[in-house]
Amino acid sequence: MSVKAIPEGCTTVTPWIISRETAAVIDYIEGRSAPRNWAG
Image 1: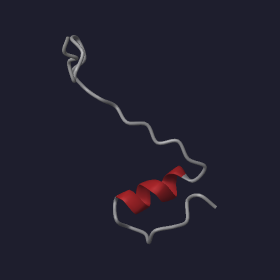
Image 2: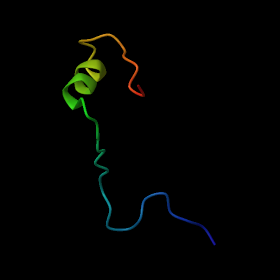
Image 3: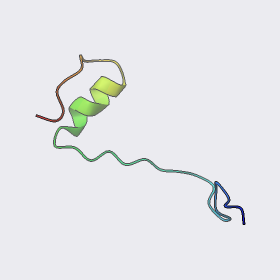
Image 4: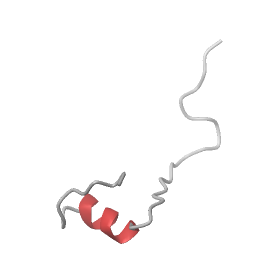
């Protein structure tokens, strides 16, 4: 029995970012700031 990588009816994936400093994470992802220690 094979498993489909994408279930029928699903066409997109929406990522979620949950953070106490979401704006800083977005700045980092977009390359506008230096990396931080997100764990601490």
